[in-house]
Image (tube, rainbow, N blue to C red; front, side, top):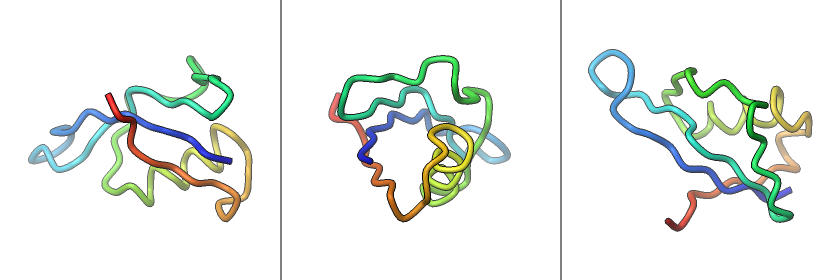
Length: 70
């Protein structure tokens, strides 16, 4: 499963974390309302694990994420 994400940087203590602002899969599903937009992440790996476990309920190995070209 391939997903594209858009993040907002400069969050958390010292501005070192980020928030997930947009998420979209290959078929156009945007998962609106299915993820916590207020949650802060310290790394892309942490974000990927959250998406796999809590948003799409897929094994981490089956998930591919990349930044959106906006």
